[in-house]
Image 1 (cartoon, one colour):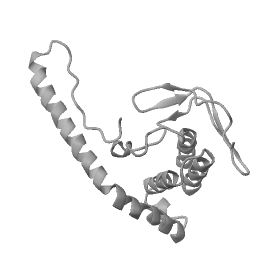
Image 2 (image 1 turned 90 degrees about the vertical axis):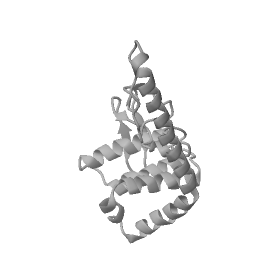
Image 3 (image 1 turned 30 degrees about the vertical axis):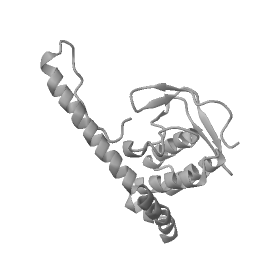
Image 4 (image 1 turned 180 degrees about the vertical axis):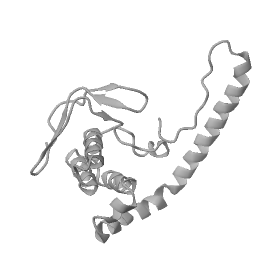
Length: 183
């Protein structure tokens, strides 16, 4: 197994961020990557509208932590983004993540890297990303629209309850916030 055995041990920092208590080690073909204790992660950075399909953690948690750390190295100029995304996909395969799920997640992080990073590896990789993305849009467009509508309606119900309860409450009433990325 390319990742060292053992559990991912983290402590919660807030609703979205976690900090590693123990390092996570990944053995690549030629390099060993050690995500140090103290590194902060959000696990898989999945927009809220997609968590029904791709939860923020799962079989791919170690791969997501590795990817977050590699992306931090990309921002520091010490690693290439396309390579970080490729290691993400490869490590998910090695963790037993099903084929379609890992390719969807890889295409999502390639899109998340931005237009320059998306085309930098060459036209071939862009075509592969499109080959994954176009069918995904066709399959998931209807459920995503329904979820967005449900999220907006639920937020409106929360807002109405907030407005109606505020004058009568003796305790603090939490103001509803419409969040795309928080669970």
